[in-house]
Image (cartoon, rainbow, N blue to C red; front, side, top):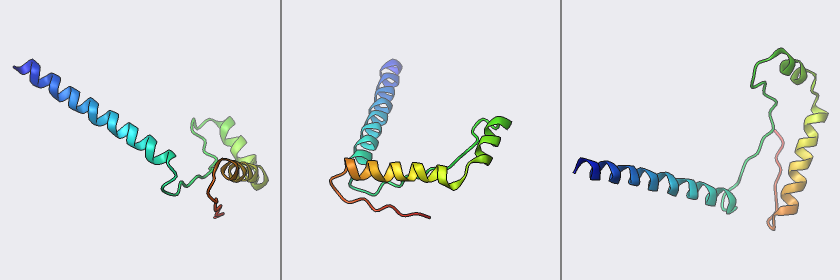
Length: 86
């Protein structure tokens, strides 16, 4: 009996996780809500080399990412894209 309960609970957890993963994928790619995208230079590993590279970045290099995102979103979307700069 205990084995049946344990398997049932694990299958229920699996079903909930799979359903949530499907729902996340569907809602993100269905274009029903606005998807906000940002580009932020972050030193994830905390190394001095990464920190030095991030410090030498200027706004012009980051603007390239903004232009690419705006162009790609207009090209792939049949709806209009509004790009708001902070």
